[in-house]
Image (cartoon, rainbow, N blue to C red):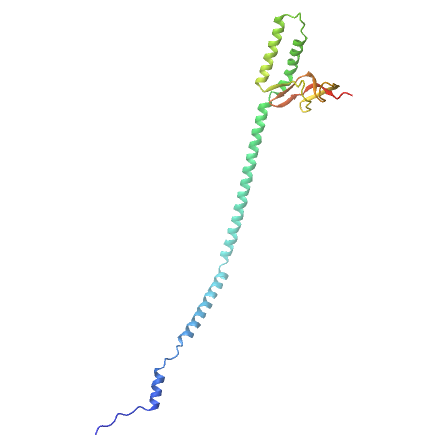
Length: 210
């Protein structure tokens, strides 16, 4: 007669269920501990490199000094270039002034000759020969043309307002017919050389009548 199969006991069933349950994984905690160790090692290596490499700090300081020196050199070069340009400009202006006014002394010496010719032409009487009069007039014109060629111009302010920049008042005369401070007589013409006063015009100026 065949035997009936044995029925598993409750104890065996409980043991089987425990074996089937998943076991807790301890690898997570081990990985976290390992990462902490790696970070500590890397931090220690970084600190060690900073302590053991003073040349890097010295090099950084040297680079900063060189950059500052370069900036200062550029500033000095810019200032030097600006100063050189100013010197060149002043030199050009001096040369231009020298060219324009080199004849100033010569013109001053020549003006009395012009004055004499004008006075001679004015003082000639009716009896003077036409040839003589024409000769003096031609000589005066030639002199004035040469002066004009080199930038000399006469200042003849008859009837103009008095200008102390280019006129020299010899006297003031009451004259109700004209406005006060008007040039009513030119005793001697003035002259300019390229716009610069060489000699002021000597004039008589009107003043208000009392």
